[in-house]
Length: 375
Image (cartoon, rainbow, N blue to C red; front, top):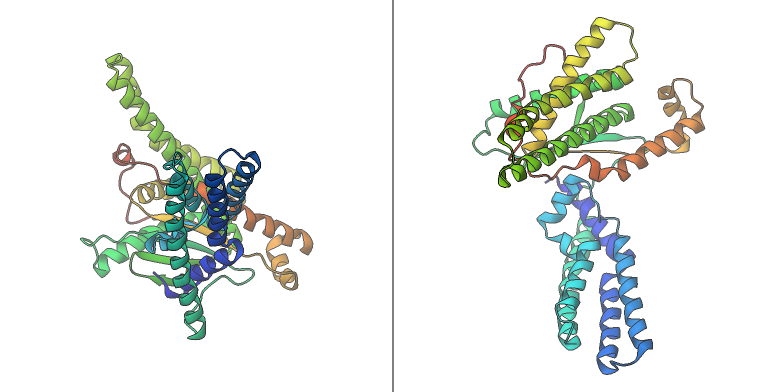
């Protein structure tokens, strides 16, 4: 992983801990549960216990790390952090209680163990964060007005030569090129900001308009993939129930063509909606190029690649630069629209993530082309 981004992940964990203090939340639940065990028939004590549990639930539900972007999520999982933050931590608390519902003293023991483990984990996080800061270990985050695409490509140990790597990133270049041309023709090629090699993790600098285009394409592809998986599941269920072979064959034939048809329709819809030029020939070429881009995205996503988009809008002092991109919109309007766009990227993290079971649909997507003459 990239050290500067790991430093940021550690800082986010540390800040989340300081904001929520999960160790204290668990202690409050333990105290109330001890009171319930000592006074099992007291309704006021029972109500206080319920309130402490609700307080814990609501506080952890407000964790800023409940829905992290894919690459940050991978970093957190690599150090087991998901077990000590947000909703995952509350589920552990709830399981400890429900598993020992007839013996509150045992529930208290289980909660005490969770509390101890949580405290030890965040002691390590606090120590790392403080040490990194004191040693001036590199730290990376976006600056105001910056936008980036995060790309995580799983490493294939059987295909790790320079030639293989060049082929992989050439496919990604060809995938992004039509999106860049369509959504921001003045943006130029995407530039690498930084990268890491545990997996191939690359961050690309771009413009808000390109970011919007990538987001729209990935969300559309993910929706198609989910539809394919649902259809495959339905067909499998019909086969299990030994329904009409003729009906199943018809569904299988329709399912086989669904990927290419839906991806083509999405490509044409996106180009029709966002192409601002007047060259109908180029518009048609872009539809073909976009179709190939979406097909490659689908294949890459089902192979484990993950994409994320993020931006920090410019602050008021930088509004004149934002106005250059606004095409005549006043500065305040541009800043408001950029802030709304940045918020939409934060709110739609799950729509950009794909975790479905793809075994039944991979064969429908084909392999990406190495060359795209229209890119």
